[in-house]
Length: 226
Image 1 (cartoon, helix red, strand yellow):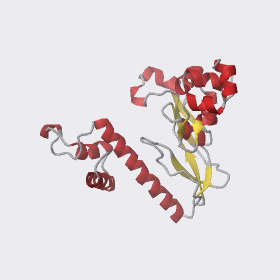
Image 2 (cartoon, helix red, strand yellow):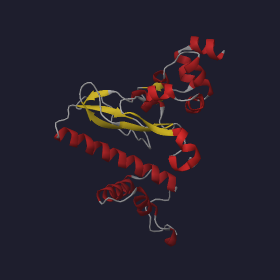
Image 3 (cartoon, helix red, strand yellow):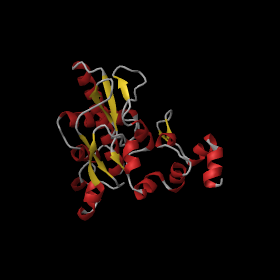
Image 4 (cartoon, one colour):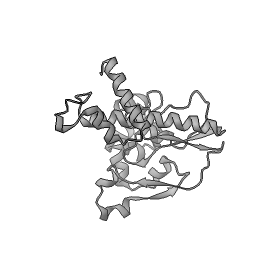
């Protein structure tokens, strides 16, 4: 863990960078330091990946709080959870995608709920209906890592009201198996599990196989022979 005093310095750099419109990479460099100086001018000796994760998570927290304050100022009464339709979204965020909350509901999840969390809120009416389209990537890779010749089969757009659950049901078997993993995929197909059942709402993460087995021994025995 970062010592309290150092954590405050890092938080200040992140907030200052965001307020100045700096990119994540620019903020990371301020924290990590410059290679030309052998990183001696940085605040942390953590890996670049670790610092990037902290910066992205902090930016998400500040952005979400700012959006909510703006929505309230505009008189918005309801907000809708919008996760990212791709293979890097966690089971918890996938399970709540499309949920609608009163903007002042104390039970409303406060994003980010985990590092690198991309889930956010958009304003809506009580029905949750919103206009437009939303992008999807039927792959666990980032778009930049997908060869151009493969993209037309994996990337597209759906109606903005399509939930992750609906997107997942429309996806091909390879994507479903990759996202869930072998055993969870069997539970999904043969045990008739919806993707909601793989999410732990209390701890805001996906259940492990051991936890799922403890919750539903009968289905495990029937589907997986355990």
